[in-house]
Image (tube, rainbow, N blue to C red; front, side):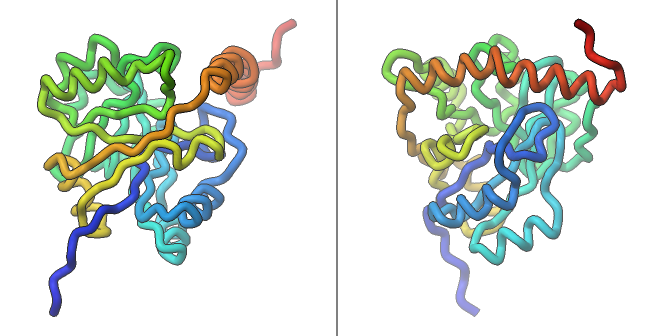
Amino acid sequence: MAEKQSSWLKVDFHTHTAEDPQDKIGYSARALIDRAAALGFEALAVTNHNLRTYDGLLAAYAEKRGVLLLPGAEITVEGSHVLVINPGFPIQPGHAYTLADIPGLKTPESLWIAPHPFYFLFQSLHGDLFRLLPHFDAIEFSSYHNRLLDLNKKALRAAAEAGKPVVGTSDCHTFWQFGRTYSLVLAEKNAASIIAAVKAGKVEVRTTPITVWTMIRIIFRFFTVDKVWRLARRLAESGRPGRP
């Protein structure tokens, strides 16, 4: 039997869909998979907030379209976001994870990524990144950057000093974001090989900066539409009527 050969796979490790309980997203996981297939992605992780969207039916849907669906989630750890690909523990919505939990939750089969570590507004790790660096397998290069604002520079320095690989992701909340920043991973097309390749540094970032005007629109939306939607959702889930 011929051995499988590694190749450069187009991968996005950080995406959000309408199933996300925290953000208002206008497309489903299946629609994103269709988009990924159309753009030539070989692998994709749907990493909704504190929710494992991955299941057998969704993975089969992706496989039929030539896309390997990777299990994943963006969990909240003491108010900061952390990406976990192929988590070895059940993702519990509303569970209060602590920074001290991270070493115990890691498994050799999982990939832990520090997302947008120095970005404001994004529930980022900031200074906590440095003391937790031994427990992260990679650092994210975020799609949210342009010639005037690029907070990835500090992340790149931290990664270089710690000898950690960098992965490019879209962190998409809208369709137009998807495909602008992603990773090329030298691996076989399966989860174990992709995760091992990233840990070994066999990964490259591909990115297209967003415009200044688009960045302004994103910030405006964060403080208006998204904020109101989150408040309304919290009130609905608590069963309390809104106050004037």
